[in-house]
Image (cartoon, rainbow, N blue to C red):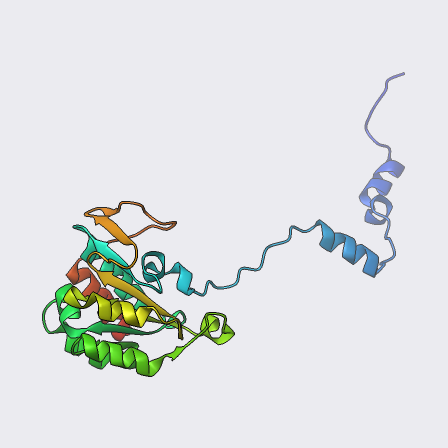
Length: 231
């Protein structure tokens, strides 16, 4: 007697019949409990909110100070330019940038100063002299006790100052805490606060973020893009 594995006719009929191979099961809608179990097995993706720059993220805050901080060294102007571009480009953290016309000319050169003032409007205040900058700051800020919640939430005022022989004048302004907060970055050594040494390749003690020192042309290009975003 041979053991033939070939199915017989009746077996072939049962194999060919799909209802015989796969019995039809009644449909049962998923219960709330099973849905919760299924969702629990799915990996949870964190919701990433868009990053909103704060005052603490900016170079003028990392190197500047309410009492003023100086910049010196061969890379000082490159850092000034980078901080200036950042401050102008971040209205969420900086309400306005105050700088003397002569200092903007020193950093950017050419006739770009007038063009920027017209293009950026209230974002940039070009002072004709130090006295003009001081008067503008005092007229647009109020004395504060340092605990005012409004001062913390309001965008700060950024002051790029070059006191030269009038350091005492700048120091007098910075001694008073103000609303909105006033952050000052001083060109050159600062006798009333820290002075940061900026080498040609960057600061001697770099902060917690990367820094790109800007040439005059690089700064002008970025500011022009800010002033004319469609170009």
